[in-house]
Image 1: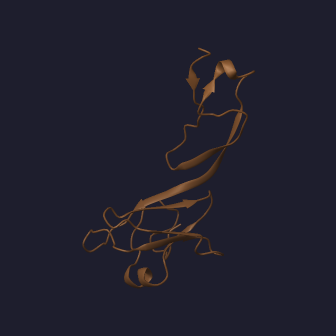
Image 2: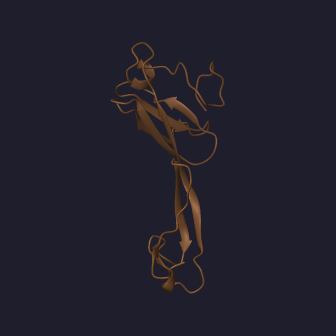
Image 3: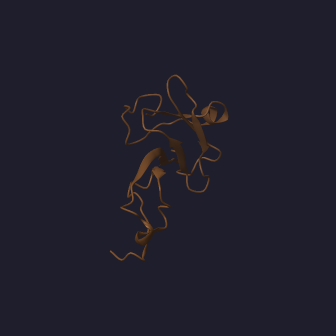
Length: 131
């Protein structure tokens, strides 16, 4: 390998994994082998997962304006929350690996909307909340 070339060390992980370097002696974006003693060692950590989705009104097919969604557990029902993008119906929530429950935020969102259908979850379709 050319010693004067500038290299970068990174992780090739799924797009929704937020991975960070937690230990390294070198700047991993600017590695020049001529400046390295005997190899580059680094440790990476999975910081978060991005939970992404889209939602639409069942009757009209439009994104629900002002809809707020929460992600939590049985013991702590609201750990993180987000507002659905009005133009695309897109939402994302940052979470750690584990079992989570997706709900409509209490208040106006839960009063106006219902979750009636979803996919790619471990919860049966007749369940009240999405896991």
